[in-house]
Image (cartoon, rainbow, N blue to C red; front, top):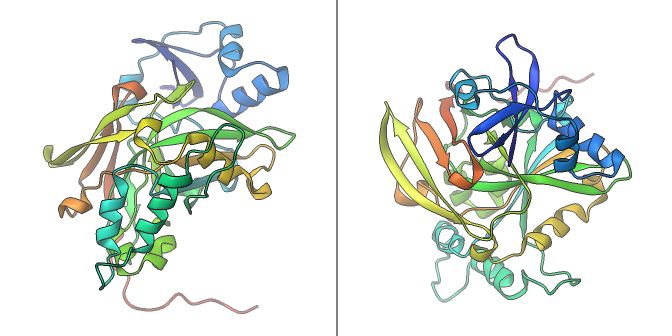
Length: 330
């Protein structure tokens, strides 16, 4: 069962539910966040809330996506209250790429990336009721950095690289009492600057301050234990790179519950009404294969278990010269 947000041909916002190949509007719903908060207030599950509203008119989601009418599957009326965050070195194949990026001169010494990865292997899947080791964590920005499915991912003029990261993201809303609720999961492109990160791993924070996209559809319910999809880059309609990617807990060094705990243990992230999109990491990058994306390339991430594919073209801000940002004094 999938949930999505879109604009109807007349411009009105709507929420759609898809089961199998049939999609219909959810009566009275114009936003996933409000729908979830209504369910929480009534003490119902999101599925039950949707079922109680009945079935609205049918809708063609593939056409909406092709026409640029699909929105992010969840958003917030104030973009500053939607948080884009993530965890890295969480997947069993993720360490080799990061290790090569952060390799020390002495091959006998473990890089910090490998140390972090080993910590996850040894303590990232605690027993129920226990707390495991905390993962690498980063912030990508707020809703102003969230690009809708089909919209461009704009790389800033100062960026050294513009690379995709095919991932699964968890989607959450905070109830009025400050408790996080998970709505479901979506395909995501955690777009990053890998050349900047390779320059010095302490620049990871800078490399992650880039736009990201997720959706088009929100998978309701549990995350499949094994997720297998494909990441591609298209140039002038031709595939120039493609590779499978794996996710799901059977392919991760951390449990989902452990990653969620170490995010929502902070009161800052439990503010009523806020929306959180948390990227769970990847082990597949075109950057690792020496591919350099350029203006107009299209990133495509697909996985049948998550519904419609996520596509975003790459846009590059033009060079803006070497002048520093001028800050005015009041």
